[in-house]
Length: 322
Image (cartoon, rainbow, N blue to C red; front, side, top):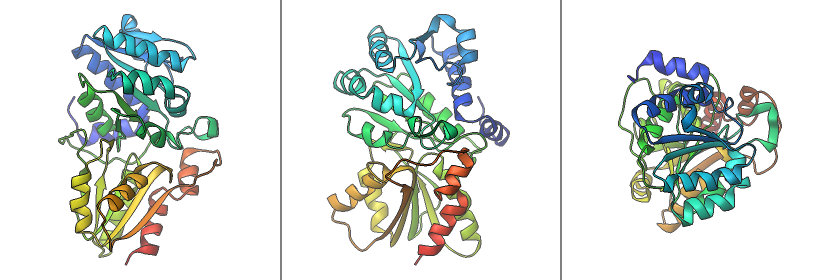
């Protein structure tokens, strides 16, 4: 599939869940050992067309997320490249023990795709919000955690994990019409952050679709004469400490944005690096979702309400920049 501006815009219009299904249909065409699983969310996972095209390679275990992880681990032992999907809180908390044992301890390379993380489930509310999922998944040894910035990066990430011999948690944030970050092909490597806007002495670290919101905000600020860099940290675990340390050594002010609570997400990973490496003299401003249960509503309303849209990020930077 050729990555271009037209495709990026089309994918943005339909959102990451629908794009997930389209990408997996393409991947399955080229990889006969790819098998998909769902916990009764075939249509919500964007997989309706997949199970029509490949009914023998789609397993619906019903509303039984814990069982799904166990079955997925067993299928990987039979040499299937197994992708399992459900909503983020069910993947990360309801099935946490099975993820810990089957994917972490037993190192079965299941690819677990967390749908609708952050606030993107909107009116379904706190029972479906993925507010704490990174915090839970980060504690599981051997697990790779990827949070794509947009649908093009989702395409790159899914292709990168085909045949990957480690368990993976892919966190899908955002909804329809989320900002486009990538309009051209680029090199994606698990564990290697990417500069979206060139490094400066004032930098922003972001992950997931917050990257696109931050990009819009920073481009506006830079047009006014500011010089602010933007780093897309698409892989939250394993975390490239050495690269981050090198960036921080040249940074006088750092902003961190993520659609996750302040506990255990990207913010926590950055603070760990600062403490572990005794890095001082950097002004750090972080903005996350609050550590509480949140309002419900349309996704665009919610990211505006919690100041994680482009306007909120712009105001946060503008009000704190030195």
